[in-house]
Length: 191
Image 1 (cartoon, rainbow, N blue to C red):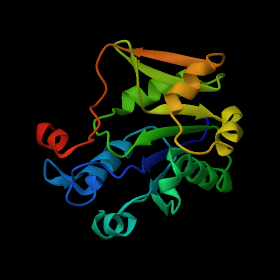
Image 2: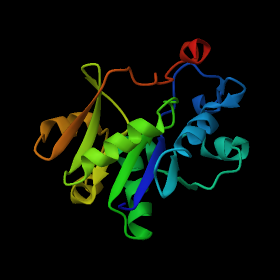
Image 3: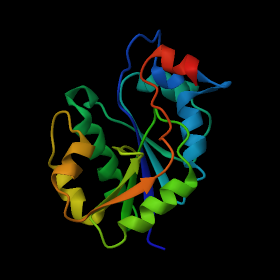
Image 4: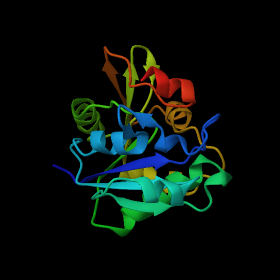
């Protein structure tokens, strides 16, 4: 099985939260700890967490983890900065074939879904889930696309970028909906 690393992006400040949205309570645990518990079941060899806003507050509150945690001090420049930081950490480590890009505000992604995405990415530049007609996360990126992403700047919509280069991008169809993203305090109350 090719070496695979999860890169979990915690790079959006959120709106309407008293503190960091990643510290919001989801069933008795923080959002970031819930997502990392999900990721710990994914079929990946390592995990890298990229923190942006409120990084110090999040670090103080996070449960102990085996993940490599890095801070993107340039997160305000746009989402491409955090993606670059995560890919850079992966490239400095052991030879890796695939990176699974997950979002720290999206709990509920199953290990089975990630395994299907990794399998579809073999021989492709990337694989993208399609949850009942809508693309989502996590996405799996093969090495062939990393350099292009390392050169990106500003706000990068990874799904749009992959959609504009369909050659080599495999879609994986899922009958179920993706786990909802937590973008506002109301989203936490509904979880």
